[in-house]
Amino acid sequence: MTRAANTWSVLGLVVTLAISLPFAACSRKNPNLVEQAPAYQPSPPAPEVKLPSVVAPRLAEVHDAVKRVFKDYAIVVTEHDPSFFAGDFNGDLAQDIAIIVKPAPGKVSEMNEQYPPWLLRDPFANPNERQQFQVEQDEEMLAVIHGYGTNDWRDPEATQTYLLKNSVGSGIRVHTGPEFINANTGRKVPQLHGDLIGEVVRGTQGYIYYSGANYRWYDPKTFKGDSLKGMVHPIRTASK
Image (cartoon, rainbow, N blue to C red):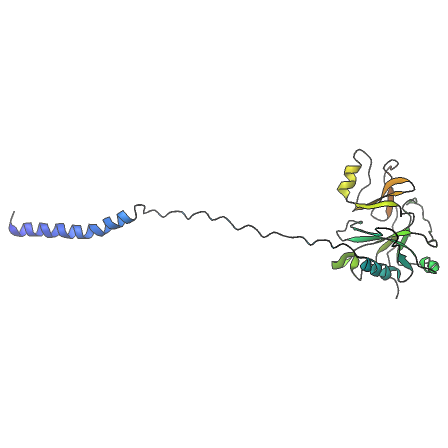
């Protein structure tokens, strides 16, 4: 081999080494040229949704509700403890209030006006017979004011009210539908629309429940089924 050819061979070897050395260094620094998948990052937990709590009724608010519906014709019977009970009695997802009331002194005639802004009913009466009821002096009754709007029974527009005769007993307590069903397993029960009011009336343990158009009495031992017919008239707001 000539000296010139030898010189060109050496130069070629040098150039080859110069080109290959950077790639070899990169290969040593990054043995895996395939891009790695990102590490798993768990999703942050969803924020806890807190449902608004139902505020227990206060006596001053109950007095206001009675005055809204009955003006000064009826008063709360505070001798009972408790004398009012909150629940969704007609099943419309609004809180209602049931209050033990009686006619205010000297206001029986006003309670018996021809077209009162409430429905006077007796849960023990035959629902298929049209009957005229009267409020008696000092008679204790259960006023159920249905909730309306965003403030339920506290709302100024909440005036739909059932006034129930023969409905104030002992041991009054609000029962949810599932509680009622569990307590009466194996018995014939009515179609439920909301919470029930359990109590002892006339020596019998039973429940007051909303049938869809009226409040009725349920006796676990004698109930044979609902047979309600007809419609009720709309409820008016009390005149000022």
